[in-house]
Image 1 (cartoon, rainbow, N blue to C red):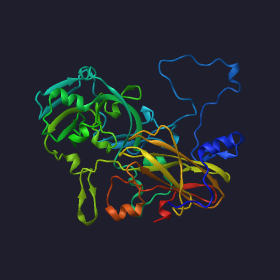
Image 2: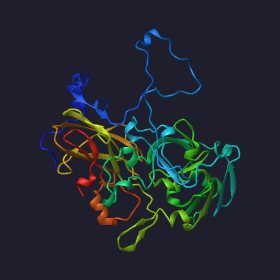
Image 3: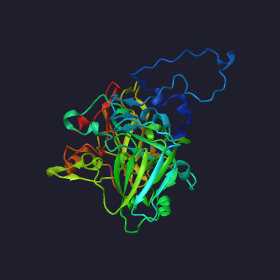
Image 4: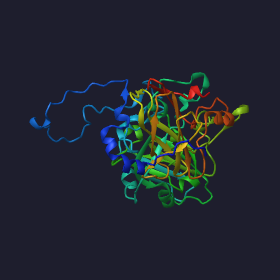
Length: 421
């Protein structure tokens, strides 16, 4: 791995040596940057010690000036909304900001009437109510969930964006603590046939979303999830029950789950034949590309921020992989000519997002910032050219190419991948 000419500063050394410098404003973060999109907030009292505060309430609210919102594109039955990655703290996404992807709108389902049928190659076909499922031992696990189309807006060289936020680019990604019953517990209960190699998962929405899943994954870490971040899963996330397949493309984690059929082959449903396949070069397509490979994205500095001054700035971002843990994130500030290892922020969990940070001394010249993630399998996040070479330029899914942000000499930040292609 190439190195910068100057020695990198570790976060530990930085904290020890510059604790006073941070307070003095010598090291700048996102809070010091200028955001082009202003939001008005109610005027607070000049002295809050002179005015009584508001009373307690049944449901809490955000501070008036904190207004994160999902980004919606079109109000149609088949649509999506995106999480505000650049506005979030830590790695957990608040449930009301978790991204959405629906194929026929959000169904109105009541937990008291919802049932899960488990049948097929089993000894005892059974129907489970939500109360039945909650009687089994539950587990809580923190995992990311990502739509396989995430990042597709920056893959086509003919339509490479410039003014695009991390939310618009990569906001089909969220991380939650999920609570539920391991699917293998229920399959053991019904007596799944050892010869079975697949299941079919079917949703109760108007699209009847259906996906085939290998038994190996089901018996590994798949969950029947009914809880999210301390509460019941919200309707847009599959209330009252969804399948959760950690590290795999989001559409396979079927929401509003109503049926599991145990089989010895994939069912080849509409949702895994007419879509969610990856076109390759030569007229071929790749089917069942379940894993979400290692990816990272810089959330600051990014559009629409402007850096008002030169000096030390903290680059921030997220990295994740469906194949275990992130082991390293490298940062380049010169368009990929040289790389320096970033600092990973604990906890570093498998199949979960992790925060990274890197101190950068901006000298006021035009710069191209890139992050690349490496996971515990040794896989390195590829360049877009490497993806084009492997897949061609027509695929709409699994776009995990390196993201690039351009800092102009005036400090304005835009998406910069087009400058490298």
